[in-house]
Amino acid sequence: MARILIIDDDPDIVEAMKVVLESKNYEVAIAKSGEEGLKRVRQIKPDLIILDVMMESVDKGFDVARNLKNDKNHQDIPILMLTAIKEKTGLGFEKEAGDPDWLPVDGYCEKPLKPEELISKVKELLGKR
Image (cartoon, rainbow, N blue to C red):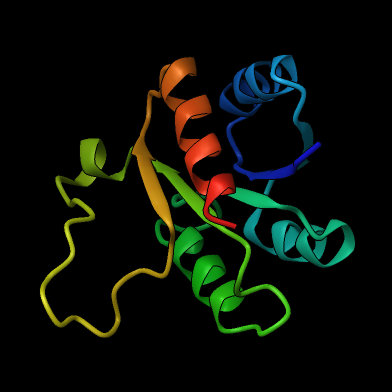
């Protein structure tokens, strides 16, 4: 059974994702902040991380993703970034050609997220491991 860590400060979103993921027999752990998320990664060594962008600060999720991808012990854990940043800021995640500082995540989805889309993305990213 795959272990998934959700790092998000929105309790409603977290609970909805937890119910959907557990209904598909995934083991789910939760962290409510970026800092707590980094601690939980070290404790439980998840198979996949679902990471929100806007938590303690507008870009905290970016910091967490970079921290994890720069850590040789955790850089292979797939990260699914889940965000409403495009809706709130107009910014997207389209990669600019040759941009070396592009966000180091393995996939992203916009909030709100349909349950089928969440499961599909999770299966896709876990399959790449």
